[in-house]
Image (cartoon, rainbow, N blue to C red; front, side, top):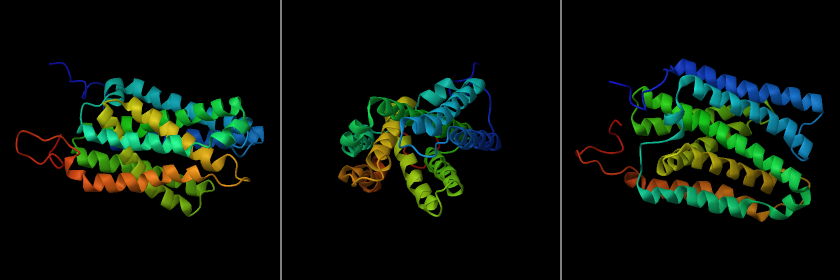
Length: 267
């Protein structure tokens, strides 16, 4: 009997996945440092800075991510999701999109010019497609192929996503990287649910990229100017979604017809 789509392709151990993640991080960090030093750029306040510190390093990492997907033969399980959730979970990406629209600093971006906007938009999409491909795509597929229940898949894929961001502590993030890792883990769960409710890894990838675009435009591109009130919108999305999902946690998974608990039953 031919393998099912979920089981098709090569296998990847947990250690192998860890190696892939480390390589992904190394590409971003090392190329970013080397290119930034070569171009004498160390921030994203200019178009040139965005290109050399974000666009090129993240582009290289993106190519690596989907090169791994191709080598494993995992296009279908990475790019599609056959584990649906109840339709009300569309509220998760809806709230994220509202936060994105409110959080973008349109005035500041207009002063930076169209080329800066395009470069930043592309760079943040590279973040979204790269990280979602790596952690919600490859990561979720690895965990499922090792037989974890879906609740465990959600937990560990989000946890790994957060832990990876602890690397920012070694590149200027300091102790704040710990808090960032906790917040990022929570965001990883939101993107995981977006993947499942949409049935595709594309929606969460685009959403992730736009969310980062919103955060950067609202807080990081003009550090020397007066703060933008909309910056708080993406930040408020986290506790709002956390409360909604906590209250409705028992109704995320569709009801099963065999009498088992949909939250704990093996997929």
